[in-house]
Image 1 (cartoon, rainbow, N blue to C red):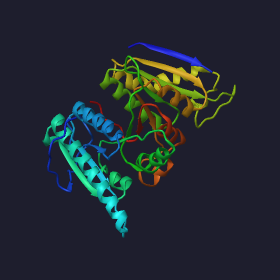
Image 2: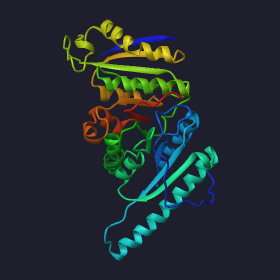
Image 3: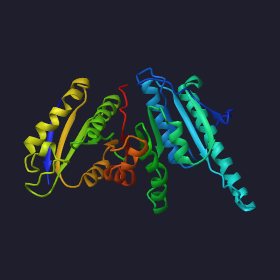
Image 4: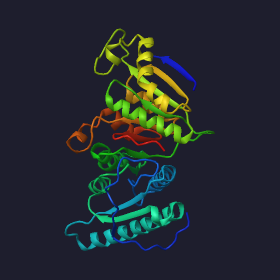
Length: 322
């Protein structure tokens, strides 16, 4: 394993589906042959196709089931013109859902794919369906102002409240080769979870791993809550040793992963967003664990959900190795 340290300022097919086709939720910790599924949310937006393809490839690599979910909303007592509009939207959504299920059947086999077409609030239904999932996968919206509202109401809500890792899929940045997996590290235990997920993704995809640690731009400033053990921000050698100690067990588990450490000055959100322009995946930890704790989704996670240029994984319970 090499290490460098940088310091710096498809075709449609007919398919019959039940309205709700539930899966067993009694699987154990996810392994290469686990029964715990990946759950993917599908709507009529093009970004859902990216999420579906990502989830299918992940499920195939891990040997786990895939559960496809679409959610339609109904106004309690719609006016006549609203009902017509709703029925039209439902028809489009149902078509996309059926196409997604058929596509997944072709790629994974019908025995590994379950599906649910459910009325309700999208975020709440997805959280319910992913109650004991290995991970929840959703598509990103475009970067329009209206999309920012959507990302906050659905992707942001599931990222904050889900009890499993949440993957928000975007198209990878254009370029001749796949970019690295990037992970941001600080002194929190949630950062260790993120590093573990990042190593697993880098190992499974044959990609290098870029570990980013940000310090205060103010010389001599120490923040015990953010800096490694109170190490001064102008002591890169100390930070490097501290990070290497935390990464040592993961390096041992994944000796094939090429790791580079990037010790930078600046705001973590800004640095990780900049890295995302040339990355395949950015992994970040979450302060929340679902439920009430999920209200504590950090500012870095929120910024990445809104502004990252590549797929983002918000790590909670750890995705097990492929």
